[in-house]
Image 1 (cartoon, rainbow, N blue to C red):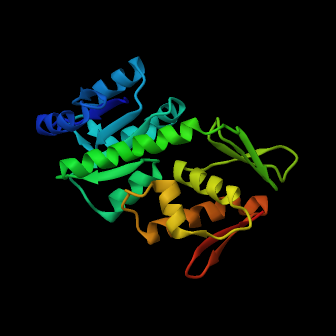
Image 2 (tube, rainbow, N blue to C red; image 1 turned 90 degrees about the vertical axis):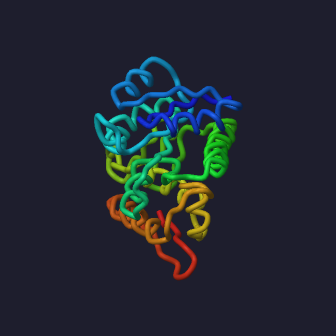
Length: 230
């Protein structure tokens, strides 16, 4: 059983979500961002289902401000939105969202996608934790979700978005191997996320620029994916 917080001002959405999730999970509800912030501060949630258009603000801006706190608590976020555009989906994943579900949605598909994300996070949590991963000039600290450039005398933190951090971790864990776009999509975003190959390329390009100073390169392998060289 997981603790889930639904942040949505629609009572119809509240009733539909509760109908399919309350049989397996504990579901709380907030109709505004201010109410959600209070609830998140008072207790732990495994997952937040976050609407984007709320009466007191924008859900994406809320996540941008709360991301470090939520990650520190091990709380994942899935966006719910009536807007189903590529820019909106791209921005949501760049903020570290686990999934983006457009309204109106099929309630059974919604249930499957939510449970798939929760299952994936539980499986990761059960794996033995290696807090520090070091390859060449790159050091990754999993407990702090940070990466450092060790090529200078003093370690320099590399300013990464949540998606860029997961990409770098995946590449470093597969150093010397070509990582396919399919594997990137599955590992970084999950099988149920609707993310285009162009979105993957965009985030890899951003990561590539940020690790150049460390003498590290991400090579494109035509028609397959990417390979990192440290």
